[in-house]
Image (tube, rainbow, N blue to C red; front, top):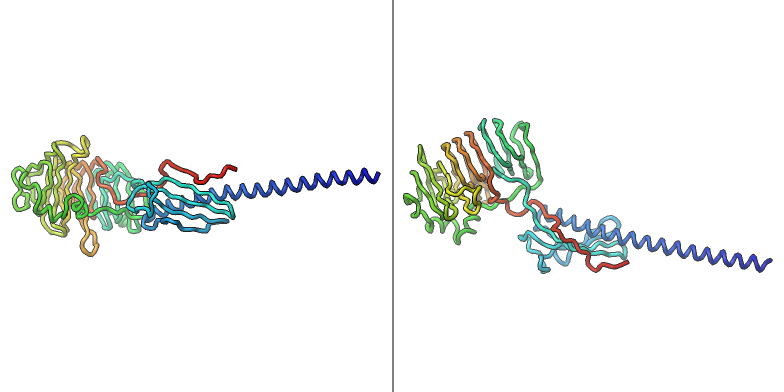
Length: 384
């Protein structure tokens, strides 16, 4: 009898020990699996953290060998690399890999994600910088989006078929906000190249070179003294102007059948008169954007759009002085139809201009945000 009881107790003890061992083992495995899963979550959280950091300022990217951040019950270490695997990442590039290792206790998992910069939202028919632009035209019509790093003052009710984008801490309405517009706001201003930077990327020496080496003699009639005061036809090329005063029926005709026509209004910071009329094109932007005509304005006095003719061109009037102060001015005093874009530090509209956005050839520097680019890989994957 006693032997039977002892044997029974032995069996129960073995079962209890087995159950305990199984329970402890299962608990340990569950804890390890939980930490293994948490480590992946941390790695992905680190990638998202880097997305945000890049979007705010690519210059602040975490470079190789990486930066470690404590988060929750673990940490992650993240760094950026070029698409060819080299480091440090070239911050002017719009594509990269973000590699991040998430660690919880002894569990660590690493992911490598392909990333690229995405253009900011907005198909801008008009974009203004850190200034106050006054729009008075009661029949002003814009087919496209409007954007600003500064303020817009609508004294009438312009028709905007797109959205209004305010970017940066100084952006918004001046005075009482009008109603009836689809408004989007962002904390960061958009950065744009200056006309001088565009000129430097076009020819060595930029505007200084264009002042002496240009196609002014090819105009019909030829441009003399860098001034346009009469009806003129411009063929493909670069034209440097310090003065433009078109009145009555005189206007500029763009014969861009063999390539784009570029007008450069200088010098930098100059004060020459620039009354523009006309601008019909042999090849409209809508037909071939590669032949789109441009009017670049580097002067303080800016450009006045007069008359009622159609203008088929992109107008760029944004520059900086030696101290970094922004300037660039476009004023509308007539009732033209412009097919293209106006990018300027300040745009004042007094007439009833119609602007039809055609193409996004003039784009901000940098990107609106950085995000996932269709590739996610886990490195050193452990099969459990």
